[in-house]
Amino acid sequence: MHGRPMLLAMMLVAGLCFSQVAAAEPVAEAPVTAPILTTATRDAALQAIKARLTRAYIDPERVPAILARLNSSKARYRTDDPARFASLITADMQTVANDTHLYLRFEPEWYRAATAPPDQAAIAASNAFEAQHARDFNQGLVETRLLPGNIRYLKIVGFFWNEAETARAYDDAMRFLKGGRAIIIDLRSNQGGDTNALDYLRSHFFAPDTLMTTLITPGSPDVQVRSQLNLPSGRLTGIPLYVLINHRSRSAAEAFAYTIGQFKLGELVGERTEGAAHFSDDTAVPPFFRLSVPLGYTQDPIGKRDWEGTGVSPTVDVPAPEALDTAYDLALARLLPVTPAGIEKDFLVWARDRLAAQRTGYAPTPTELSAFAGQYGAAKIELRGSALWLIRPDREPRQLNPLGAGGLFEAEDDDTFRVKIGNDGLYLLRPGSPLTLDYPR
Image 1 (cartoon, helix red, strand yellow):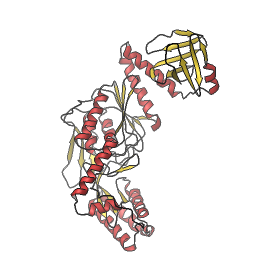
Image 2 (tube, helix red, strand yellow; image 1 turned 120 degrees about the vertical axis):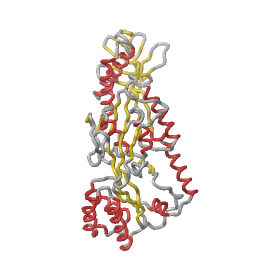
Image 3 (spheres, helix red, strand yellow; image 1 turned 180 degrees about the vertical axis):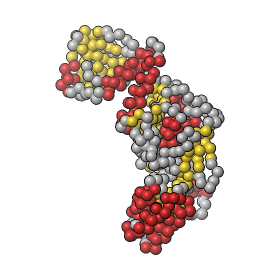
Image 4 (spheres, one colour; image 1 turned 90 degrees about the vertical axis):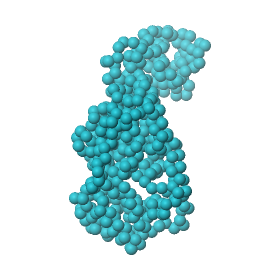
């Protein structure tokens, strides 16, 4: 975590870099020759790094061991390649500290911006770029989906914050989720971001003014993070919640999952997260480096701890690619017993059966598909390329997708319409409909 508001100084989203630590100058043309380190600049950089660690690192007891590692590895650092130098320094510091918010990066553009005199035009241009970057990713809220059975899904790739603009995007997303019978929030591979967005999101799952966490910086007053008093979209309490995580979920993404887990507000489905809980600031190290040094830590009000170095454990441990289907299955299983008979239950059963069929992984062979083709009374099943099509009188043709074994198919354009192809003919199915032979063979 980077300071307050940053949990992560550099957030990677779809291969793009996003930073709110310092205003950037306009991008300069690439130099003709790559920057190189000399013995003098390398030694000066190493001294500056050690001085910053001694003065500011969150865990003073580990500093001597980190410094000893840096001193013993000086021969290894004898390179004129600044990127390699930064990589070696980072590896040694993290090996001792086990802290992924402690790192050195070769970032000459950031260094120049951080050390240059304030330039209001450059700051405005940088802010405009970051705001547009957030818009390009819809403030990190990249996908909403209505799953059969009225399970609402939201994918968040990173935590941006562009004041009211981001808040409005979250308000819209929260209103969408609020209409669901269960909620799935996908934070797999979410690398973190701005804590304003994090706090706005998790406030929706708490009563107003609830203490969610405390930020502790040695030598400074503690900062309590409490849920917001007013939320335009209302609260999302009382709705079954499932949060998807994996080993690449870190920082702010971990903070959300950790809070949900500690307060037992929902299930965490997937893999243990990275374990990056500290918050830090960035220091310019001559001649062209960016040094991140953790300054503080978070403490939840229940366990009085955080997830630094250990990660956030899932409550349902499954491989990351299976997390969505698993959460969906759990939501359906939870809702079915408490849903009275009727159309809502019919749709839940319909969704459960669909998921069960898909999870078998069955796919008909070309020979099997060909065997299904043929005339069924007034209807016809036609093989076009590698797909079957249902042809009926006075109806548009519909492509059919296989849904498990047993001749069951679902319409490509309508997940509430299925066809079961039997030896005796075609059965057309809708949620709650009886199994009736519609087109005898």
